[in-house]
Image (cartoon, rainbow, N blue to C red; front, top):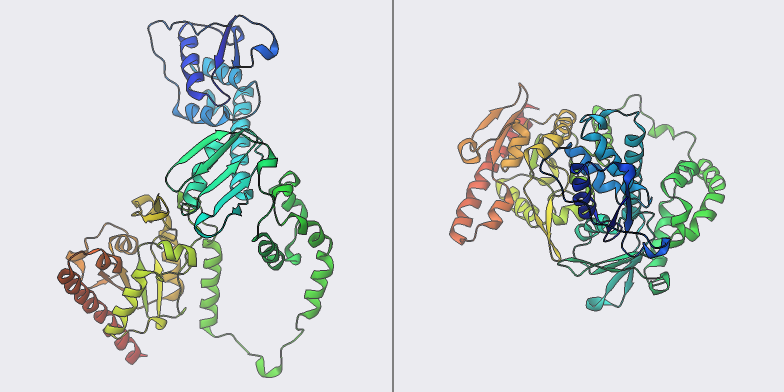
Amino acid sequence: MNTIVLDHETDFDGWRHAARALVLDGIKPEDVTWTIKGEEELFGPTTTSSPPRPSNGTFNVPAKFVELAQIAILHRDRKRFALLYRLLWRLRHHHDLLEVATDPDVISVSAMAKAVRRDEHKMHAFVRFREIGREREAHYVAWFEPAHHIVELAAPFFARRFADMPWSILTPERCAHWDGFAISFTPGVSKAEAPASDRLEETWRRYYATIFNPARLKVKAMNTEMPKKYWRNLPEASLIKPLIAGAARASEAMIGKAPTEPHKAQQRLEQPMKRKTASELETLREEAASCRACPLWKDATQTVFGEGPPHATIMLVGEQPGDKEDLAGKPFVGPAGQMLDRALVEAGIDRNKVYVTNAVKHFKFVPRGKIRLHQKPSTPEIKACRPWYERERAAIKPVLVVAMGATAAQGVLGKITPINKNRGHLIDLDEQTKALVTVHPSYLLRLPDQDAKAREYARFVEDLKLAAAVLRKSARAA
């Protein structure tokens, strides 16, 4: 019998090296025992051995198995190492085994990976930080009890999401810490070392009570998404039972306050077309809020949808929301937005009369300490987001679409489009709509030379004056 001792519960590299050596030496799964360092003594003395030296030779397994094993090994089931080795042993002779959805081993490993991913999602959703200290001395601490060994898997999400605040996530097994620059890990602690409450919790409870909608309450669905075992660590948990108990009464009160029939002076025989378009945009906004077409939603605060009149003549399209836009949920409210506002005024365009949006609706960035640095969207991300732009344009029916920057031009025209080669003239999109390509306002902000900045800003204003001419011509035709 071969007994393999791994260094710790999530020692994937140790398992992988040992498993490879065992397979190459022809050691069958039933002849291998897997354990963790320090556990041998718990279950009585046993003869341990290092994995046999592999014989010459190689073998390959699908990349899908490696990805699956890296997640499944984080499961708490003690049989996971043996199960993964048995699956690896079989894959050597049945390369397509993972595609057999009815295979018991495939089912078991897939279920383990799914449970780990679900636990990771719950950690992302139910960690609640409490403030320790004030102002510059503040540190944020949270307590969480994961079902599986997921702390190292889940920690990078919090580093990206809360890049500007130092935090610690304490768990019974492993603790994660972020100092603004790097993640570190320490051994687990008891719950007694976690803070009990902070000054912001009452504010959070008031907010939760305010957004609770009794008319949309589905207790079974809520218990599925927020199992009761997580309640004890949530500041809003003390409100859940009273809110559920009073949901029926609150719903009846809401219905009782609803008007039965509008005054005759408010009635209309038919709805104007503009209201219909506004409704289309609101529907799009709601749908886009839950967009998962590309991975950018995972780290962004929210979807930043377009904003402006639903019947606008001009549609301005930028690249993607920046840090300020990601937090505010509105396009062009940061430094680039201020630059755009100034240029629009000089070009004779009222921003309130144009529709402003972005080719990509989620903020893409890389954390650098407390700062989130903008990162250019990739072509797959632009393509994934293009249907939202197309549906916005179809709802608004603008006469002119102004694409600001290379990403916007690619999103509007559907292909990589050089800016300088195509700016300064109108491009036909269809019989009713033309496009104008120019630079993005953030490009002007990045220019280090003041003379170059002034020169390029003047060119940007001239491009917008072309848009202003289209706006005036459309107004005269109307």
